[in-house]
Image (cartoon, rainbow, N blue to C red; front, top):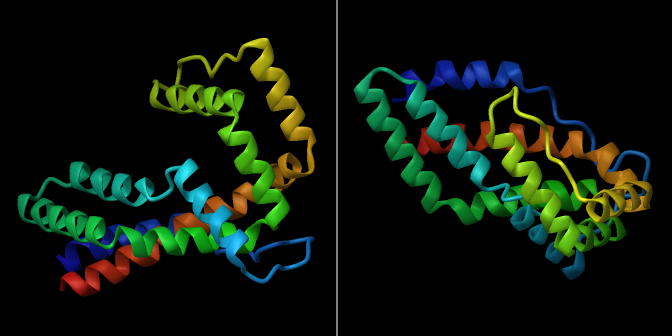
Length: 184
């Protein structure tokens, strides 16, 4: 299994840029109960843990060798068993990238009625084919999104979300390597 997956992991590594430094342009915060709470909440709201499962799922369905597919299925089961560990690792990315106030603002927006509707429409648009139109928002949703993006939390999200995405890609790659080593 290790040899079959190492080529894919190598290609995945090449596709991932190096992790950027966190909290660029702001003061680094020390983790406390609030930062842990909000970073974990962001992992839940963005369903970040599913990225690992979706990655392994894509690997399974792109593989033609049945033995490798079986090994990948075993890897997927192991990943599900270790989901909480991966969750905590992703929470650390949010925790050290955003300030507490930025996380509060982002969570507040995502938990609002407009934020939930916008997130739902964005997810639906991503599931559609590439030629499908992007999400269409109501005037209230558009107003809420514009206000959020103009806020300090919205500005931080625009600036730091690429850092978070890079960190999550790196973490998926690293965690897959750990699971492969463990699976033998």
